[in-house]
Image (tube, rainbow, N blue to C red; front, side, top):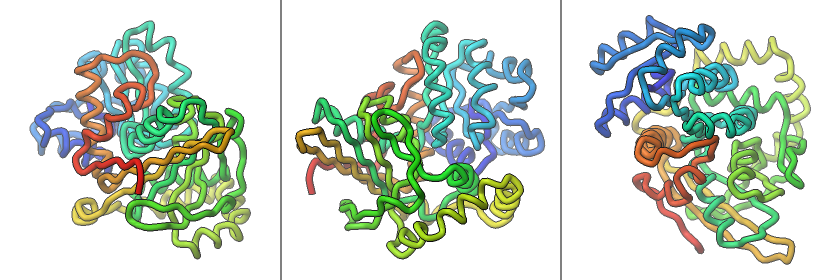
Length: 346
């Protein structure tokens, strides 16, 4: 089942699933959006509202796996996961929200007892970075520090931007000594060399602060995203104002409404021509370090392909428990995505 099939990324996943020979049951809370989409593709549709538990359970009883594409996931994951535990249905999603990862990993024992898997983040956040982090960590046992950076997401969708608003309203964070720790927005700006050149990067609250810790047990983790240098340094100056404004619900509500009106996400040409570039570095207390790089598809295109591959892998392998992608499928899972290459040196 593909839940949230009519959103921007949901539609991309649907197109990819059909292309790969899958015929998912489509679901979501809006009958008006769902039924025309199901008719277009000749697929079964089941309206299910997370706020109506019995309706959700009735829908999930008919499938083995549900892929949740309806964000912000902080609003949808709990009722769907609870329904999955009731019905014995495995759960995947494409979240990048740290509280969602934290919440889902807390269900590990219940998922194992029920014989199902719960795997959040099977899209661009966090498959390529999680797999790269796990790969690098395996090369340096005992590593105490992990840094991850990426270039990509030049044209975020409305859903991504709304999630970023929620994240930025809480300020910057890193992981230190195993704990999530505040970091002022705009701090820690540096240069990183990727396969396509050197870029200015700035720490952001990326999902790997939770998932990479879960996958590697490395206690100190920083996640970065590439920005034009002028923007990265400007953020340092205006960060207190931005965080203060976004902490007000009325401001966030107005920003979300503006995004819904003006943002649609990258078009097909952008998705086909674009690419994503990642870097990971692990180091230990003696100063020894290992680096690795990964080149892959544009982020939204990657999410569509990766999510469908993840569903197929769950059906084939039958993992159980609350897992990251690299734990469920191994660090080489990402190499099965078309156009993906990993490097040990530049």
